[in-house]
Image (cartoon, rainbow, N blue to C red; front, side, top):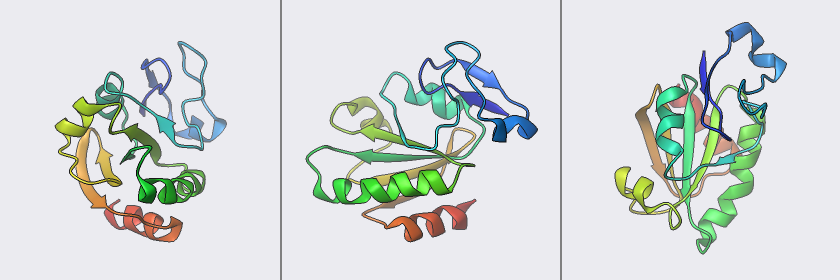
Length: 139
C-alpha cells in the first residue's frame, strides 16, 4: 500500500499486514497513519491525494465559518473511529489554489478520494454518525 507522509510528502510503501503497527515515514519518522485529521496546504495536497492508495476524505473549511467549527469535533471523532481512511483538513482561505481546483463553492465541503480520484462530495454539517454513514456508503 502506498501512503504519502503528511509531514514531509515522502512516498512510503507499507505492506497491508503492517498497517496496524503504526508505521513511520521512512524519511522523517513521523507516523503515517495518525488517528486525527491532518492539515495540508496547496503544496502538499496534490501529492498526498495522488500518492496515497487508502481512501482520503478532505474537509474544506475556514476559520470564520460557524458550521465548519461545529463540524470539526465530529470530523475528529470519525478520524479516530475509522483508521482505514485518511482524514485531511484544508483551510480554504489559506489555500485558494486547492479550493479553486476542486471548485469549492460552500463550506464545509467534504470530498472523498480513492487513488487520487474524487468519488463523492458533500456540503454542509454532518455529525459523526452521519459522516461515518456517508463514507461507508461510498466505499
